[in-house]
Image (tube, rainbow, N blue to C red; front, top):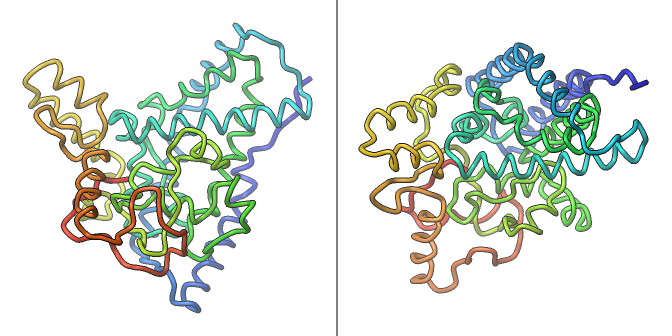
Length: 327
């Protein structure tokens, strides 16, 4: 008989509110970081909309999960080790979802909502997608059901994963102990992920365990010499939550109407954000390559993957004039 598992996210809501209040107090006391009430309000509205969208599609996602689980390869029981293994494998699945969400425009159109704020604080963690079901984000967890993990177990550990990721959206924590920074995702690692500086683009996709980025070559430490800049390449110019939720889908629709070939149409959907059919465009690789070439002409500047890690609050910006895409 499966246990009656609670929803970790619902249980964590009071702690979320308390931590936001604490962070606001620390911002005032330390003068580090910032809160824009309009931006925070947009994040909260997007979080509420995401909750509603998730509730409307939860039944369909669960039905799909149960269908796949009925064809499972193994019967995995409700043991403690199954929960631990499910948590680790779910985090690995999240890493590949997150990486794909930055490298394939279709998935980016849904995920970009989370990166659309130019501020980095705990309310940013609540800025979540309204279109996750439409973009088929749930596909990345289907292998867990096929292996044999019960859907209720997977959704429970996925909730724990989401709760963990809340606290790393802050500038109030510089560094955790070295062993923790080596294994776990932290505020420092995740500031890099949210930054639009060329060196930081498309790095640190981890949910809980930063070891995935270290293993798969996508890890970048935060450098004291490069303070993270947040936002996306073409900031929205509005705090309208509805536009934040759908603007990239509108961009895809516009580009498809203008496409001159099937190849271009496919690239506009399945290519990386910033892809152009007739040149390097504004992909993260192209942006980083231009920046690296610029740095090569400036002796002593930090190179990709190099330098000494340091807190986000110090240091200077990279060379001006280099465009950045949303991270």
